[in-house]
Amino acid sequence: MQSTTPATPDKTFYWQGLEEFLAVDALPDGIHRLRLSTSNGTALTLDLRIHLDQGAPMTVHFYGAQQFPRKNTDPIFGALPTSRDLGSSYVLIHDPTLSLSVDIGLAWYEGYKGFAAAPTIRTVLCHLAEISNAPRTVLWGGSAGGYAVLRHVGTIPNAVGFVWNPQTAITRYQPAPVRRYANLAFDSDDLARGAASTPGITVDLTTLPQMPWSKSSIVYLQEADDRHVSRHLAYLLADQFPEVSREVVRRDTLFGLITPNFYLHQSLWEPGHTRPPKSAMNAFLRRLLDMSLDLPEILSTLQQTSHDLIRASKSSFRGPVRFELDAPVKPVSSRIRTVQWGSRFGREVTAQMTDTAPALVTRSILGQSIITAFSVRKSPIPKTALDLAATANSEQRQYLLRDRRASAKAEFDGDSDVEVVVLDLFEEVRGTVNAGNGFIVTNHGFLRRSDGSDLTEHEFGSKRHRTLWKSRLERLNAISIENGVDLVLLHADAERLTIQDWEWLGIPEPTVEVLDRWSAMMDEVREQLPAATWIDAEVDAPLHDVATITGEKLAHVLTELKSLGRNGKKSDPEDSTGFEHQSTDSF
Image (cartoon, rainbow, N blue to C red):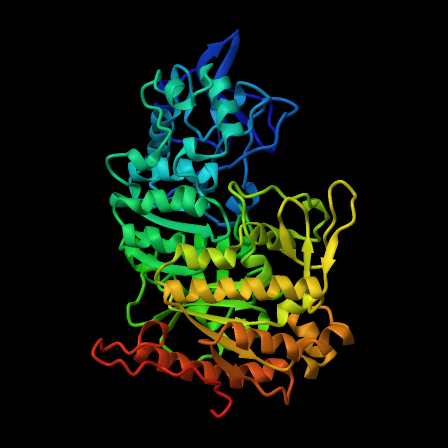
């Protein structure tokens, strides 16, 4: 029996159970609460906010983690403004487990002891699509909401899933929220064991007999700096697409079709477990709601939407460049796997390579000094004594986290297929900071110790800095030879840069004393990296213009390296003439 509250902008409709709800073939706009069971005298419900337009496509939103403790257990309906603006039917679903307590904010829409939510959610969504004659249903959400999308998309007729940074196994998520969910929902410290008592609950999508894309279309967005790349995306792909599974953990940017039903986009939009820019999310949603094209056609033409997402990057110094806009999801064997490491100058030089340069740029590493990258790391990685809250923004915080894991060196260790590292040294003028616990970081100027102690700074070219510099260059040389990696050094005279050049680089203008040491430090580099190929850039114009010319030189060098094979050796094993690494200032 249906009843309603007095007329309000958002009416609430109560249903005595699922059977009564399914018997109705027309539903008014508003909040619908389906009684499921009773717990401690309180009715437990499945709560939905519904707006249906006959014949229109339908969107279904699943939300991610919510703050807790909450003031009450009232239902939460996220993404209402976006859903309204899309001009389609929409359904917003409240996670029923969050109605059990104010002390939980994350439950993945799986349910609790004695109640598996998935079958009920699936039945309700199929019913809503049927009674509204929806020609397409777009399920969308991020993080835990993305998990729910992947869980359901293969069970809804004419459905497509749109997710960002989703979990693919609850048990591989952070231990604290998983344990909280297990305790509250199943009275167990072990989620897998507790959930096993209720048939129909799934805690790991990678163990399903059929992946979601085998039945429905998926558009999957992933922030490249998010730990979910290795903990969730790579696991999801490992069984059926092992090559792509390896690629996602070794590259910043890639996008395209893995199968006709599965479009993957990975890039850097804002460091960490963050949602894409709203404009980009809306663009993907609107493409998926375009009923003038079928889903295979839409997925095959999403490259421009990927470009728009890359252009929406929030970083001041990571604006979109050519090698990010040409990043096929599957590796191309004819291209040299290249890592760019250094400053904005190196990034722009690498971007300015001609279209014919045979390179696939897998990583663009900014702001990490050689000393930081090749410092000795304890196992496990030491915790920093620095106050991360002192950083000005998430990008600066990410610099610290990358320094902590020596991300540049990690590229040598983690991608055995890297053939060339393009390196410039402008970032080195920042010097380094000893942050304690064996943790040396690049001096980005926003650092503060948590305990209030003074930081130990090593100015570029100082006695202590030079000692560290020499030993780390030796390590860089050794690991390059060991891994068969060619080093290409982009060199320009830092003493000739103007204040405008330093501002363009995003590096504070060095002192006269630091600049006076530049030439001697570069001599040290030439001595310690004897096999490196040097590209000398003449600073006779603004640095961003110099980058264009230098990019042409880099394209020439990479083309030559491609013809020679790895580490300067001829591809023909019978040809032992080798390759003489020289400065390219004569180009």
